[in-house]
Image (cartoon, rainbow, N blue to C red):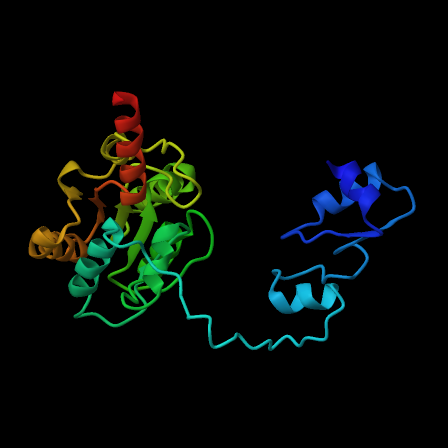
Length: 263
């Protein structure tokens, strides 16, 4: 397929996010005299994400970085899916934190990071996987209390457990919310290593059993969930709250697969 494209074209433009890995391979594989353009030869900038203006320039069009979006295109900012369990968690968290000053909720990387945007505005930081817990720990130790960390179930087993261990060892007043939607939702619904293990992991690391609380993020449990969050946020020690409800996208996909099997 690559050879066919090469034979039919006078030159090749590689539009690639991140490092020019495929561009390097194509230059090594083809290298028969035709020009292969991309990040390596400066047709595209080496740093930054691709956008319409950069691609337009690479294609030889006269466009500016401030390329105007046609009025026909409706603005669609990223948001949580309709009925997402994280939305109910953020509503409860916002109410539980309403009496405190802003900037106390440290989050992690996942689809739940969208809680930083309207209408929730519920989280204040995102740095890298696992940083939610360690940043909240640092804030708490610096006297910025209460401090809350929000992390996903799969991210917790990927790089959050070590941060929780540090919190337990130092007995830092911190509340860690582990959002359990039973799947690695953001990157394609891969299996989460945390499924069925979160409570036992937390207890094994040393969190007191009575301060490992599981809630169901649904509107009908809103008041109950707010009360649980308030209690654990006020606790002067390490507490874990686990909002547990399946990702709707994954759940719908699973139901369709089950129906297909039944046929």
